[in-house]
Length: 197
Image (tube, rainbow, N blue to C red):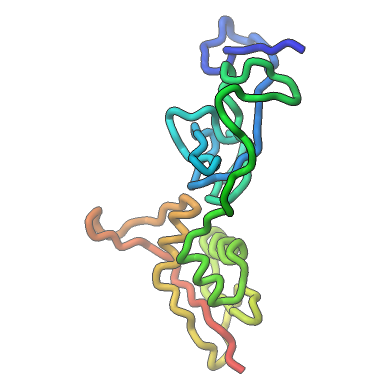
């Protein structure tokens, strides 16, 4: 099997040239928010983090940012792996699974716990609210449902810093209507409420 190296990252010799290459890839877990195509290295726990000195790039074909704790393909630098085959070894980096459990945003995890739902479900609902709209979320028996109207007597859940933490985790940038030193972000006007009785 031919191992073609040093093709990507260089200017092609001639327009219209066609070729195919082998690229070593490995499934890794994100230790921080990572953008598709961003260079990454592994931290002490063998989680991928953004770094200009990285050993590869995050899957550039993903359509959304990679959140902390998510698994993704890391495409390794072409000259890093001496023998690219379907089974390969890297001479300098240990790609064994991470030694720690995935880290979650503490604030979001606490809100999810209070609502009785999973961390991923809360992230999913917030994402849907931002991208598709919605003003009310009914929390009932661990289920989060976007509704047009809350039932009478529903108890509102304080989500003071949920949107700021969600934005940080997902890489979403809300409009800032204030100043750099005193930001006033345009967070969604959403009420999370628990049904009583």
